[in-house]
Image (tube, rainbow, N blue to C red):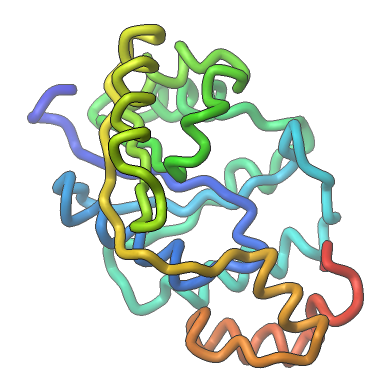
Length: 209
């Protein structure tokens, strides 16, 4: 990737809901790879996940907006969530490169996703359109991740790097379960997101929201 281009991270996910683990990953990506900004891109109709509906799309986006409001390096894109079609990563990245030829994109994913990355739709095209950053938490075996990165780099002829992040052992699913069980989610996600979830009575019975 050319050093003369803008360096922008793309962080896709359901963010159902967004939490501090996501924010830590994005912050570390900016710091470690000198990114100008990270764009959070909530998924719409993903190929391998149940669709929670348009109302939940609105809630998920609003929670991302609240979570990133105080960080000028973070932005949100509604590109996928507003699409009526199933969204594939390689297509999204291709369109971004066509629209912004002066930008080098860095696609951020969890390192655990590397172990089925070759099963994604056209992973070789994802690697052609972006540098892949694999966020490694402390509880993952770094040596195993590095071996997988080396194998995928050779297989896909792409540029894949490790993104080191502090361990934050929480997931969106765990947050939804805690809400359903009447347990606190304080300090797991920003206070504004906690308040939004309470005000809109999200996740209280159906884990899909």
